[in-house]
Image (cartoon, rainbow, N blue to C red; front, side, top):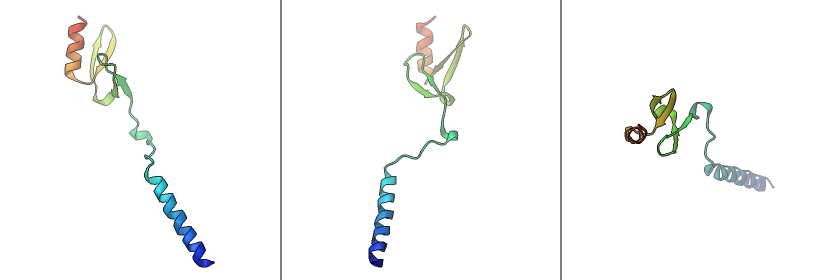
Length: 76
């Protein structure tokens, strides 16, 4: 009987560990970043990596200098 309980506890521990392997860790508040949309490509990306342009009182964000330059040349 004692052997059965030991095996059952060991199986439960192994099962719990195996289930937790496939789960991603929940995001911590300090890991969450504000996202902005690239004005040219419409892709969302972290704001802290953005190239920012203010035109006519409106702020535009870009993933790269190339996207910024293309947007500005198209919208003169």
